[in-house]
Amino acid sequence: MFDIFTGLPARVNDLEQVGLEMEQADDLVDVLNLLYIKRRRERVH
Image (cartoon, rainbow, N blue to C red; front, side, top):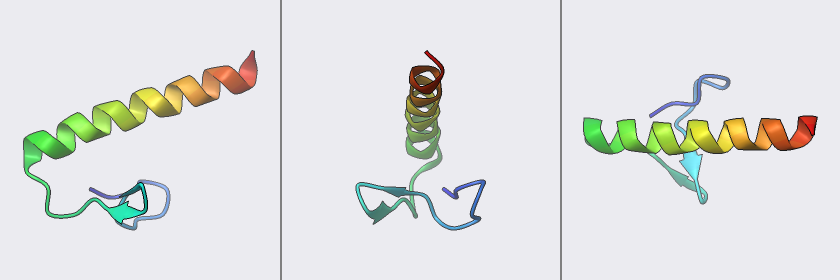
């Protein structure tokens, strides 16, 4: 799984998220995207 902004492997808790099964990667992307949306909303309000 890669960070779309840097092109580097995504890091969660300082661990590169590489070698994941497709389902694991898909689930992790969903969680990370929800956290990103939550952080952006908190900055606006």
